[in-house]
Length: 206
Image (tube, rainbow, N blue to C red):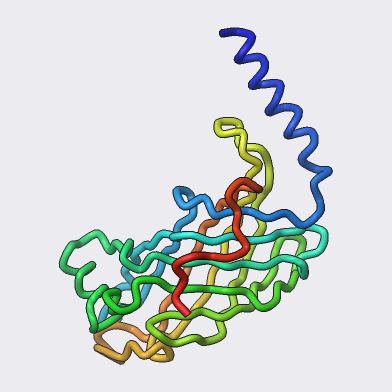
């Protein structure tokens, strides 16, 4: 038992020591447990309630030395939407908003990644949502990349944010005063290097 534990610790230390050498472009699959998407919109200007969604599948490529070589392809599970209330969830999934019966997923694909600071950048891309595809830019911060000591996976973590207008994606119900048009997006991402990372993302909505 002790030998196994020493071996596991040794593997982590070895992988961690080697991590700084891995500066080339690497492909990661999204960790769908630790990757979450939060969205907020005005409710009659009283407050900006928030909900969350999960990533269904996808991958990204990241090179910390050459951000321009990075790219993202991700599918979002709109049915995973959770506002903390069953009736509210059903309303947002209905034809009045996301219409998840006909559009169960959203799909974001990067077109260009631009580095703007030491750990900051902008992911320029296209979002397909509710049957409409429009440009969307994500402001992104690279948090860290290291070996997870519990799973032994080499993991990269990011935080990102964006703003979109739901009317531009054909969702105009209750505008402008009941439910706000501007929706703020906050994304927390963890990606696992190698393994099942895929260049083609199945189940995406075009």
